Length: 366
Picture 1 (cartoon, one colour):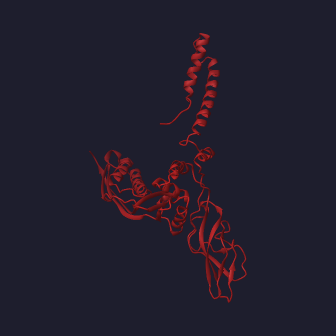
Picture 2: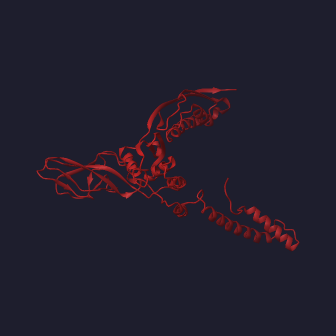
Picture 3: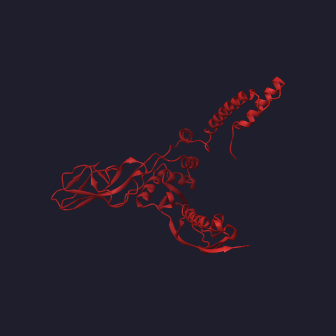
């Protein structure tokens, strides 16, 4: 139920003002009376003022606060919004021929794919004498997601002049650049942050700390298979599995002495992927024949939405009845699910659809 601090309905203020005027003047106002213009103006002013008062009150509540108001509320919980992070990758620097001494590539050496986005090395690296190449981590000069998605080999133009005949190229795709944490994710993390005050290593505390490691982490599952052992499984946005570098980042974050209870052994991993196929046959009611083309498009979207639903929550069971519901809501009259079958998932598993066969079998009547 939405919380309202004051009434914001303009018709109510108009009604109250008319009643007050008629009571004070002992005159019945007609719709065309000129006094109505002044009353309408006053009702408008009262409505705008009430909306501002109501919004001011709502901005003091965690459920409704946004932007800087949400940041201010977070101070009561002792946490901050996660700020933008640069995309990273591994750069390989290569010589055309081996040297009899070390070739030094200074920290901050810049390489670009297009002259606009620039990556720079985070530390000095040397190509040892007799070797042809060396690798080093690099990060984008600008923060945010703009540096993500460059494929292996695309970052290959040196910006800085090096003393040797050296070429550069990225050996990993650029990833993990992140924009500032949005309000909804920050709000949920604020709610979860209360769990961090426990000194017993609660499930909620581990979820909170894992979400705090990087704003692209979408979902976390925490369980303890035996006393003293904690398994943390997580996925990235859009249900993507984390790579080794992100797993290590979370492992390091959770290993801090201010996060991990001393007696806990924490193991961080990506979830086990359980693949399934979506194979359905469906019919459209005769009365919807004119909409058959649109319904077929909506059915395909419903099937892919179901796949996204299962693939963005760790431990979410594969439910054929959920698929049927979504397809029928898209306009299908009868749905036959050949696959998937009901599958119960464990806390460390996630379901991913790997194929779609959606067969439109014609029209049906009651």
